[in-house]
Length: 313
Ligand SMILES: NC(=O)C1=CN([C@@H]2O[C@H](COP(=O)(O)OP(=O)(O)OC[C@H]3O[C@@H](n4cnc5c(N)ncnc54)[C@H](OP(=O)(O)O)[C@@H]3O)[C@@H](O)[C@H]2O)C=CC1
Ligand SMILES: C[C@H]1O[C@H](OP(=O)(O)OP(=O)(O)OC[C@H]2O[C@@H](n3cnc4c(=O)[nH]c(N)nc43)[C@H](O)[C@@H]2O)[C@@H](O)[C@@H](O)C1=O
Image 1: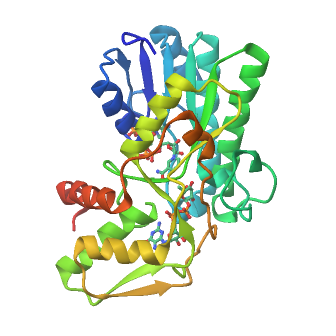
Image 2 (image 1 turned 30 degrees about the vertical axis):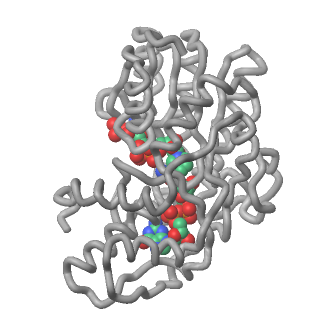
């Protein structure tokens, strides 16, 4: 990307979009176009077409989406399917129509079959049945991958698809019902510590395994791939290592300094038993993550503390 190129970061206030924004600013890029969802609802096809025709960005990072943890995905199934299809269809097609030089579509590790062999290689896409709790979201993301592939093959568009593993970091969502596990645990342990609660309730059995990548590492990988990856095939972004939800809970409990106990509510879903990314393709290109999980959790806890008033702890 040329340093003065016009870059549109869709979802620039979100955890991922804001991390990409910070990374690009730190690398000396200056020409950005951004809109909040209130200013430009990406589900609105006409508004998105007009925006692209007026702004004509050179590069697009598509980090706007309806996002949430296992309960949000399972509860708002229609919105996770429709909103995401609308957002990505509108942005990808407008990017093509206005001659965007390159677009990056962000998918997710949940696109892979629930019982796929581990670690998850890129070629396992569409080889089996999906995890039911996030099937609508996964179907939308798979459609986004196929849109990028189709526009490349029919029109020669340089649209790439990257599949991040579970993410965490600054500007994460700490809502107890709708967030992902890592921010939820930070908030639950912190509130229990402050309020002197004897136990914290967590969901499922604690036995599923998850891989976690810090948003700043993800942003670095996205910028690296925007520079160095121009292939039709999707590419995984992860750390190549995972831990059980129980081990994650113990780590966060230690960082927060909570001394009570954990109750596992097995009425709540476990979701996919394991989704560990195979990152050999990414490593082969020369990129590897830097932030280890304990360092990342400590920094994220500080981010939570700085925003705590917003969550009325
Ligand atoms: N978080 C995770 O663990 C993972 C995330 N991803 C992917 O990364 C991307 C970013 O996720 P993340 O940063 O975590 O999500 P966030 O919820 O933090 O941010 C999503 C952003 O999307 C924008 N947005 C949502 N709906 C609309 C809309 N209708 N019109 C315009 N903008 C909209 C929001 O804008 P505004 O703030 O202005 O309302 C928000 O800034 C997504 O594609 C997600 O699927 C992939 C794997 C894991
Ligand atoms: C990124 C990814 O995120 C989603 O998938 P997920 O990885 O299953 O999401 P999660 O982070 O919410 O949960 C991970 C694990 O953790 C357990 N768990 C324990 N206690 C809490 C808890 O308090 N909150 C939450 N949310 N989970 C908890 C929970 O039961 C599960 O076993 C996809 O829908 C999809 O959106 C997607 O792509």
